[in-house]
Amino acid sequence: MNNKISKIGVFTSGGDAPGMNAAIRAVVRACAYYKVDCVGVLRGYEGMIEGDFEQLDARSVGNILQRGGTVLKSARSKEFRTPEGRLKALGKLRSEGIDALVAIGGDGTFTGLHKFYQEFSIPSICIPGTIDNDLSGTDYTIGYDTATNTAVEAIDKIRDTALSHNRLFFIEVMGRNSGYIAINSGIAGGAAAIVIPEETMTFDELYEKLGEGEETSKKSNLVVVAEGSKIGDAHTLAKKVAERSSYFDIKVTVLGHLQRGGAPTYFDRVLASRMGIAAVEGLLNNKSDVMVGIKDNKIVYNDFDTIMQSHHEIDEESMRIAKILSI
Image (tube, rainbow, N blue to C red):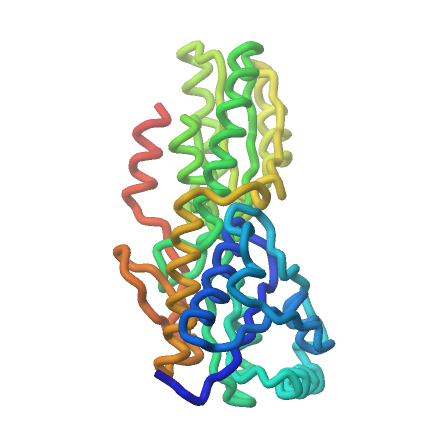
């Protein structure tokens, strides 16, 4: 164990994700278990620059496991992107006696912490907390499972009204430039088509697929669209289809930030707990400038270059299954 680390700072940054609180709780309680002080940095890098800290112990993180969002709050910081801003943050950390950091967030969070480590060599480890599931080096990111379940629940409800009115629904889900939420919620929700950034489907091919439903007198259709779709968002695609056909009554639902809220699933709670403990144990075992990941249900530590130079790709089997089931 690294006896030089006596106080670990933990913070969340970027977009919130269900399960972040479970990760915070795990970091704090792991620190208590190993007799290391823990400090919460409020509002991410912005709070770090301003010295917005809160002492945390095992009891102060009670009853947050099941809560969505992040009790430490999150914010984006333009100032931290500057050398002057990072120098301010360093001064605040030193004043507080924080000698190691655990960040919970996505690639933007990791980029900032990597730069900070390069400049000042403060031991640091990242935990992947993002609903997008777009980070390589881990099979799952914290929040992805909950967001996908939320999308499936919404799709099930939309199907009820689609069947009642012979409607075609375009349902847009989040995921930024990743189609993970779309492909899996689409399969689970019985979508007629799934439009994701990773696939090269054209609009004509999408329209032809929907036309097959018209020819067989299909009473409703659901199309799940990832927000990063290269052929247009849900509103754009709905408009294009309406210009070509009057068969369906076309509606659009954009789920948006609905997917970020709510209590995390058991899977995200357990995943976050494992990763939080692994982050603290990694620091105490002299690991730094790495991201905790889960591969084949085992904890792994990924170098910064590994996670930033590649994308978590959707496997071809998922795409094949979606194609077969959409007939």
